[in-house]
Amino acid sequence: MRRSDREIKDRQEILAVLQKCDVIRLGINTLDYPYVVPMNFGMDVESEALTLWLHCAPEGLKLDNIRRDNRVGFEADCSHALITYEEASRFTMEYESVIGCGNIHICNDAASKLRGLTALMRHYAPDKEFTIPEPALAAVCVLRLDVTQITGKRNMK
Image (cartoon, rainbow, N blue to C red; front, side, top):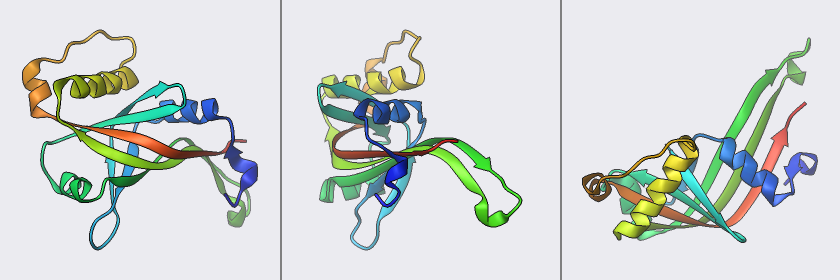
């Protein structure tokens, strides 16, 4: 990382930043060029393992590319604020961000899909109780991203 003064070194702080974010951008390999798509997500942390859960329609370009190459990158950012100065060249942005990579898998069994959707709901509505009916479970594609590398960065004044 070029700006090591902005690096978040503590893993728990990195996870806290990720928890604050409401959208993750998934970078998928295609045959010709990278494909980046914003997605909603949830997360599970067990010991040192971080799993991100995403959902989408059961067909499309994203899934076609994942089936061919399941290596992905991701990025999430939050806490944005523009910092202005008299001189335009000194303007900067406050932010917190997380970047990582891993292997993504399409979940086919109901138990994995339920676990993933539960993580998603917990991320966006942590204080609510809910159920996921079987028809909804059957109609959605759930993706499990096993994170292999993660870094964090912030610029907060």
